[in-house]
Image 1 (cartoon, rainbow, N blue to C red):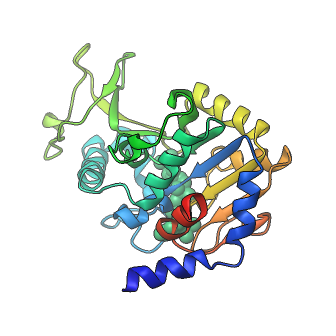
Image 2 (image 1 turned 180 degrees about the vertical axis):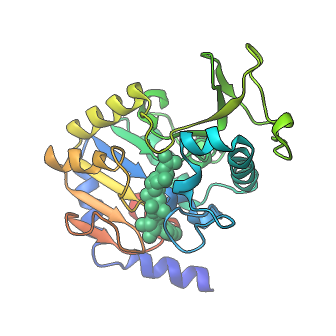
Length: 270
Ligand code: OAD
């Protein structure tokens, strides 16, 4: 079948063996993921083809100014993305990373993704069969927030929020149960600070890492993209899995050019 031959090609990738031995030699590994790890699940990437929504570019909607100008439009975009992601499932890359994290206590996962596919992979009953080497909580760091959390635009309220959003008019937008002000998605917009705790933990893990695995991120957005630079500065070899060109290509020790859903399972479990 086509699936088999794809898988075989990934297994025969010339650099795969080297990448596997680099990872095997590292007690502490930092994994940095971006939109590309979820592409095969059906989540659109930001900078690739199909990364557009209506006539808008993400850079023009994912800003505090855009929300202040037209909260209904921004909520409509986030509502669309929430529904889209809710209809997607973790792919073999998410599942392989989740199993590998359970088996190896030295692996820290840093994601730029606001989808919840890494979390859902970790909760998958098949993944839970892998014995847990150490708690996952402090080894899973989300740097750009979550589509499924909202926070108040006025007070300190923030919580998980999975109910559908009615963005048909300004009057139906979700409001803070505590103070009544508008809620907004609890995601990091352009020009905003990253969550300081997770960001510090990510850079600390990078500074201690003995290998760094980057999956499905162009590396164009900082500071998150700098996690890979920090790991390399600390001496960690850099392995990049991505079918396209990335800003890491020139600095990578190994580039495994291919789809995450094929390469990552072959790399971590093949
Ligand atoms: P980008 O859209 O910039 O990059 C996605 C990467 O995924 C590209 O390098 C693609 O080649 C690659 N890709 C596509 N299909 C793939 C596949 N099947 N397997 C592996 N890789 C694949 O997305 P990010 O780097 O995640 O910020 O973007 C970073 C940040 O910019 C996002 O977190 C978001 C956005 O604005 C916020 O939300 C704050």
